[in-house]
Length: 482
Image (cartoon, rainbow, N blue to C red; front, side):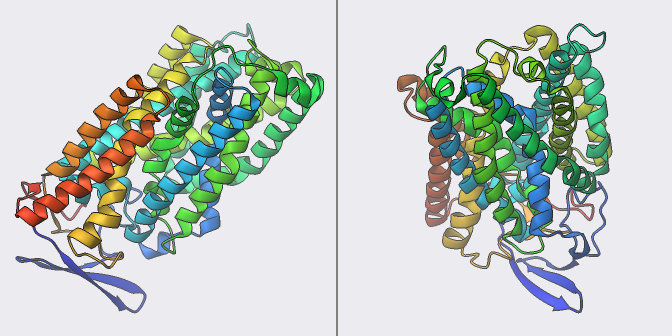
């Protein structure tokens, strides 16, 4: 595999990257590469499109302002009491904050999407597979689950009304949510500015009212879960709820004006705000055991609050799910515009949401299983991604400058697949699934994350020292970024 040296040259308002390899010399201006797929899916975000930290914080909060987080907290109430809900929420969110601070920094340094970034650590074909698993499929499934929860909200708010049953509401709700995802980052940003402040205020008021009418804090602390679980299981579930978002954080932070803008925005929103939402959902469910959470809020006279947070909250998150899924598919299949993938994934996700709705109704068992699954099998990809950029490239391969550690642009060469990364992901995924079965106190996400990162580092170091090729095959980037 050939290693590029990259030099940054500023000419007026433009930055030009000079990429050198043994057989090529490429000068690439960020402003000259054509955005063939839309919203810079396969190319660097140009200078004039980059945004502030506040803008990205609002987008992230818009993703978090969703009933899936509330229902995630409610699902925790199946396993834990109030104090333990706080513990697993805080610990899980700190893990998510630290992981995504690193992945978000990669996006802020490279100005490239997650799936383009993965070309260096996984190889070009490896990046296609990883992107499909992490986002093309997982984010689409999240779209399906969010759309199903939209149906749950509608059914709880309008019981017995035609078209408001869980399955049917999921169908027409999913169609509405494809609109802003088709627009792109601008659509995510604008919509989030409207919903985020109102959403957090309403959730706070709902929790305060519930505690007041249900016997106060004493009743909350006395409530006991029906099926207690280990703390490690709860942390893995919390990590699983947002590990896809943590891994694909570069999809948003690539729009950063400064390298750490998006990373700081992510850390703030997930460490300081997400535990509050999870705790609120868990507390509400503990105060209303066996009841539909939405029906409980409606019974307190909060119909319009539920509708506002349910409709717009799901919208600001679900368009982001489709947005990231479409970027992954643009990296996997040539000559198909991003907006087409939004429609294809939106229709498919809506169909899955309807099936979940007709099959599970308002039961949260499906959400528990899905979150735990993601918390087990996505962290191995995250570990390789972080280890490669922050350790392998600078300390094993000698690419010390973080600005030019990952070159991109027409003519850039990648391996078809990097076998150390592939081996690390496969082994780590197996151990993350198997080890917790031996001892449930061991968090699955931690096994997968540490195993993949350490194994990738060791295999790359051994390959370099033994002069074994770690990159198999050769793939040259085209002018369209594919």
